[in-house]
Image 1 (tube, rainbow, N blue to C red):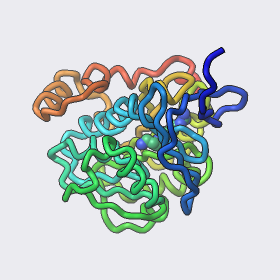
Image 2: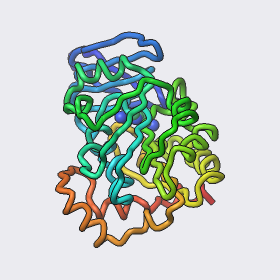
Image 3: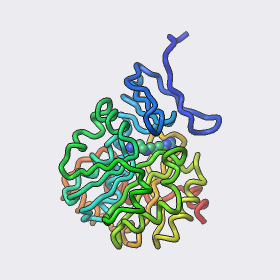
Length: 285
Ligand code: AG3
């Protein structure tokens, strides 16, 4: 029999779960807002979970963070002001700051402890981004921020938890109304929107809640291994219809001239990611 080993089992879906072998636990505690654990796993590098749900792993975080940052940013083409909601591990901020056009990236994270512990135990996620002079970190609830802030942004990215606990409000109509008021005309909003196969009502609910505020609401996808159960969907909302229909030659020119090196994202993947599996497309009609 195999040697007894510590394990972490994710509690997200009913009756079905993924399990990580744990080499050792680096940090575990209740923060002001949620239960946080960071551990060294057997096969996915360091792993961070909030309230029992996997948020990020060193091995596959690049897929998620590149797709949440670069699809909207290259589609926009000249984003200067970017707002990130959530994203306390810093991986998304790292990718956003790779765009030289971005002169200010404001990140609103509810839980200071997530930032602090990720800087300490997942340093390759932020990779110095929190010390970048173009980064502006605000500790606040994302919904309060978008309802009250007096700035507008070219691109807003929601890197939230699932709609359970502190992340729940980031999937509601009042939040999307706040997003609309903080987006410059023609700006782009993108958000993690769960794994469509396992969390199908998230896709339909988000579409119906975003539609009153934006004339173009759609989704794009990426396969992130540790968000198990099929492709992850990202919500997309804008009043600029051409933004998600850019010719590949234009995307290639933007990608090449940026000099940004990626491991998942490329212009072909970008364009293809808007093609939805039929079961998702059907659920939207
Ligand atoms: N984003 C975590 C998304 C979790 C999705 N979980 C799921 N549906 N399997 C925040 C952490 C990445 N910066």
